Length: 153
Image 1 (cartoon, rainbow, N blue to C red):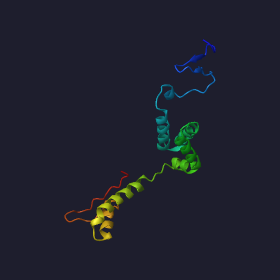
Image 2: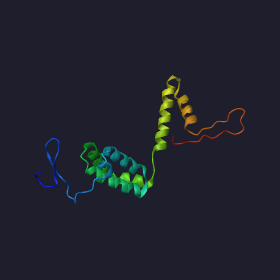
Image 3: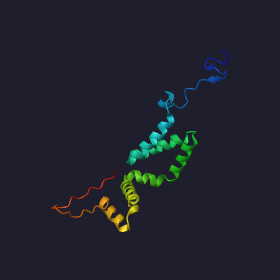
Image 4: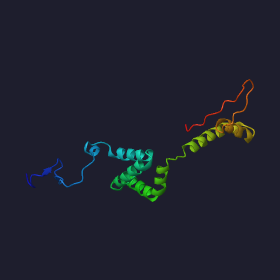
């Protein structure tokens, strides 16, 4: 075959050279023909979900991977994460989240939608205090009020 033992001809007639052994190893999921874009997305989710130094290391690995990716949205996202990397790493170190605040906000918005028929805003405030405010009034026939449990759900 012309071109030496390492050259091959594809169905389209183009010649392909074998990669030199010094080429960077390809991740296993790409070699298998798997969805590497999905893996890129999932690794970012894992980096954000994992807190502490391990999460920061995963984020650094993801940023390296995204910067070498040829998909424009991933490259742009990597640039944005690099721009805001200090506060993102601080959030990963502290492990804090605004999930409880967002959950409470959503519950109050749902209450607001149901309160459109009320005559006054005081009724909405009373409903919000009962639903998410932790207010537990004494009811007739009960000795002690049952406290409400707040959760992030």
